[in-house]
Amino acid sequence: HPLSPKGKLVYLGLEGLSATNRLIDTACNIGGRDCILGNEIYRVATTEDQASILRDTANSLPSITEWRSREDLECYNFPKDVLGALRLHSGCMVVHMPSYLGGLWDAIQTIGGGPKTWKCLEAERSGDTNYWHKLLNKFDTVVLSAGSGLFQDFIVAQNLPIQLVRGQSVEMNHTRKTNHAVLGGKYISPLPDRDRVLIGATHEFSDVPLEPDQVVTELRRRTNSFASEIWENGTIDRLTCGYRVQSNRGRYGRLPIVGKVDLSFHGNAWIYTGLSSRGLLYHGIFGEILAIKILQT
Image (cartoon, rainbow, N blue to C red; front, side, top):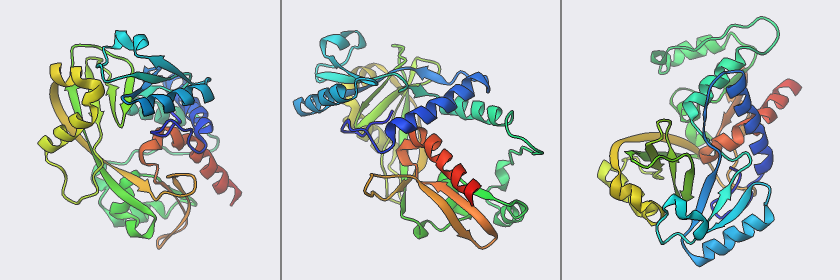
């Protein structure tokens, strides 16, 4: 979805949504993957100020949003603290990322002219810097786009305006099936088997990760106002952990870092990182921008 936590349209938000949906269609139709878990997202309001802001959003962006009153939401069993919600639709959706990336990879291998070889290299090579340098030196152009993994073998994080942020989430079993996501500071999203949900994520800058009980306490505190039924009746299955590359905030917010990068072992290398929490929204539109710049060079 293309909105900020306060319901404002982010920079290139609609363009990014359109580009992403084209790629999702490609993954589904050419890649043959069913990666869409739901076609609507709800951003809840638990205070009158939030409700007023989100009603304004619905009025200014009627093509993809609408305000739903508390009465409209009775079928979703939201707690009484929820005063209403902004419904995001028409291209805003819940995507199962492993299925999407698998479908996109399959689709990529069916397009492009000229000779090509597709490789998916084994994970045990990921820490072997000399192996990667020797391999990538064979190519005319290299694009580094491995998220936080870039800063293990290729690039010093301090050389870019970024922070690495740890995020821990909780997967819970729950008897009530759902196919929509709920946003309210943190998020609750369905998982493919429908009677499981993902709740997240923490936002950790410390070198020492939060302990599991601290993760659960933090996420419950931040979501209980709109997900008390899940916490009271669901059971915790496992915790997951990942890292996002978050760029510094600029004039247009936090934007991806796209451009050429100086590498000692390659003279035509490009970087694509810093998508942070908007990777699904921004990867398509900024991928197009990157491709154009490479072809023009």
